[in-house]
Amino acid sequence: MTTTPQVIDLLIDARWIAPVDAPGVLINHAVAVDQGRILAILPSGDAHARFAPNEQISLPDHILIPGLINLHTHAAMSLMRGLADDLPLMDWLQNHIWPAEAAHMSPQFVLDGTRLACAEMLRGGITCFNDMYFFPEAAATAAAEFGMRAMIGITTLEFPTPYASDADDYLNKGLAVREQWLDNPLIGFCLAPHAPYTVADSSFDRILTLSGQLNLPVHCHIHETRHEIDESIRLHHCRPLERLHRLGQLGPGFIGVHAVHLDEADLQLLAATGCNVAHCPTSNLKLASGFSPVARMRQLGINVGLGTDGAASNNRLDLFGEMRLASLLAKGLTGDASALPAAEVLRMATLNAANALGLGREIGSITPGKAADLCAVDLGSLDMRPCFDPLSHLVNVAGRECVSHVWVAGKCCVDHKTLRFKEQNHLESAIALWQNSLEFRRQPKHLP
Image (tube, rainbow, N blue to C red; front, side, top):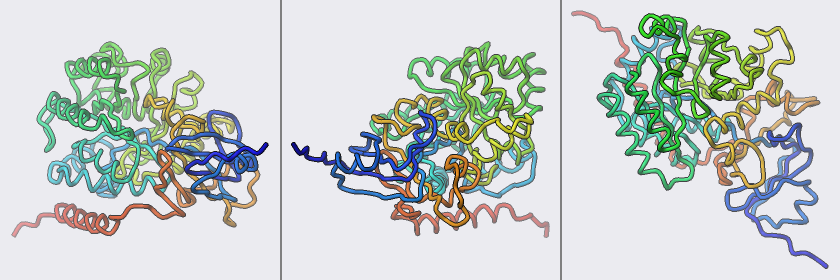
């Protein structure tokens, strides 16, 4: 008795598949995709007997991985890439970045900057990003144009910017934007208080209430510099994490960004409350903030994902670079060559980040039933050979230039290294105009 093959949208054959939620890799398997979701993973021969795909993709020298998830970025700051380099954090922020934002910040700035970031991230295998910036409507619009998945931050500060006047204004505007995007399955929102040193107790109280009412994650910079901790002790008589704990902020819905300067009590507090950490190793090094104790966090069971931070402080939105650097730093700092092996660091860039965002049931692994957010990485070039361990190659040899295909919810966004975005020429022109505007403002003012 012959069974008629099931018609599906897409069948992807790959030499290797890294499911992430299961150990190791699958060899010569296929992923069946239908209506934007993963239907099955099975040996290629069985897949061709079972399914009749409308489209078939063959990846003979590739490893197929879940789409990468950027757990922390400021996407629109791509327009300020390289604007102020080789400076410590507070000098960089107060004397260069904030003045540039005050002069140029607008919905169009955020729209074009986020478009630029989406183009870069998609081409590097990133299918989802967790953003913290201003004008969230513009950021959500840009992500939707590219078909990306995004968690848009409802950023909160106490001081005015061109976007909002005070903490309540930031929150009210962000919540209104969230209401407008509730029906878009790829766009979610999180509460994003900038940092303990820029947000008051009363604002954190409101954020806690909103987080509980709306079931939104809280995304906040924490323990990035020694100065931040010293000032917290001077002003609040406790370290920033302890202050947030007293305010009820710490818990499974809290994502602490950077988390560089942690003592053992801080680490135990993060573990006991079930917090998540967004590890941004390149930004931490470039701003000379220090080394996050990620290996110790993993020993304590703290969920750690990877982020790039913004392109103004990185200067790349490149999770392949973050994976390799995170692994090397952990080995070097601990003196343990087995710290953060390739499989673990890939999990940090995928499933761990998804779990931190509350999206672990939807994305982060190649699992039947989940959304088909996928990334194909070509390991077939001469500089990739020989390949004894494709997971090791993925982290230690490959780079984002090896990404050949990217799908978000089953839709192809990068095809044979080509971004599927019709307005690329317009975007390039817009970026050139922004560069001219930013460069003009940076020119030294000469007295007559």
